[in-house]
Length: 257
Length: 290
Image (cartoon, rainbow over all chains, first blue to last red):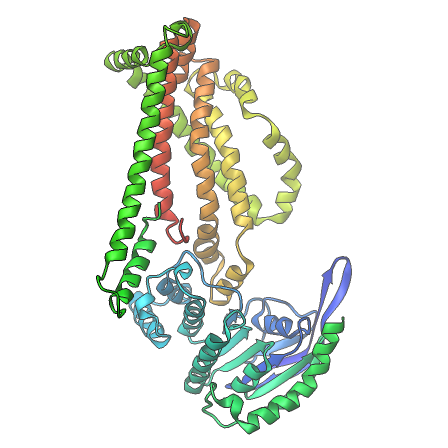
């Protein structure tokens, strides 16, 4: 359970105070898949980073599983668009890192790494360094890494933003499957409305400059979902149209700004 | 020079794919052809290198005593004879050991202190900005100009040579460590902290390995400078070491002796560099094509 209580962020940039996110309230119940969608600069990543404890709110507070987030939040998994894998560690060494950091015994680490790599289908590439893997493989390793220590909440900031269209669908499908199996709380930041609808239980639309939540829409498409064919589903198309109408003025405003 | 494990593994994977490719008649033929081409290229490079060496030596020997007075350029034969006699009477071993000792101790002292200082200042923005003008000032100073001071402080013994080598190495390692620690990616730091890293683990698993490439570059470039520091110290004031041999020979207008000393330094440099390259290739094997 994540409870955002009046959280706001004001950055100081070039000698001026820039409101990145106006005071915001939002509840994300445990086990729910929630997407943040909006133009750049709408505060969606700022809110995610506040839940992760990387950014401290200027006003208000955020509660995660009953505790107020202050400082780095170690009870989440965090994945960004940028490559967060350590380039000097091989695939298996990257997956084992959070377990080493959390002081797991060696034999448990080995077994866990094996099963995680098998889950993302990279057992054969375990000794490869990130530079030797494709972009999609690196994302899978990163996914195996955040899932290895089994955090109850995943925070994902455009994790598949750098992938090509097909690979993106494959990774979305993988994430949907993992969510079906584990029912983790997932907060997923994206520019891509179709991606948000396909994966989420709830889509939160942000409006920009200054950032605030514009609307929250429940996505009641049945699960499990077939991400590849969902775009041809009339219910999906209706939702897409409806949410696009809410999002389009924001994106238009950004384009004119 | 792409003969590291990474490329071998890639080539092997590609070869496995190609063996299943219809129409590919002789599996492995292109791999073998590529390997053959690489071998040939390496041979050409070696042959070229040896040829240039022989050419220069032959020219040197040829013009010496014919176009140019051997008083100025000696000759390869005379230099070889001098090196041989130095080896036989123990002069070379003694001088070499002395210079190496000064160089190695200076290198160790300079790199340890340079690493520590670079690390501390790299981690503290405030400290770095406070120290900045002083660092710039000392950095701009030609370190060689400090040799007379080092000799006043530490005498004409090995201490002043160690100090010279350490001083030069300190700055190279300091600046590289500083840059390396500042260069650690914020994303790596944040993800590691969220994954559970405490302060010490952050150093061990993220900051040190991330800065390692920079620090190694600093160490690598400073090895020849450690040699320079030690030899400059010996040239200015000393009674032992390769620098002393060169200085003494020059004082006696003994050109063969000067060249013999230079040859020893050059060969030492080549051997040190080759060793460092191997070490670097091993430590930075994760870098694509490193």
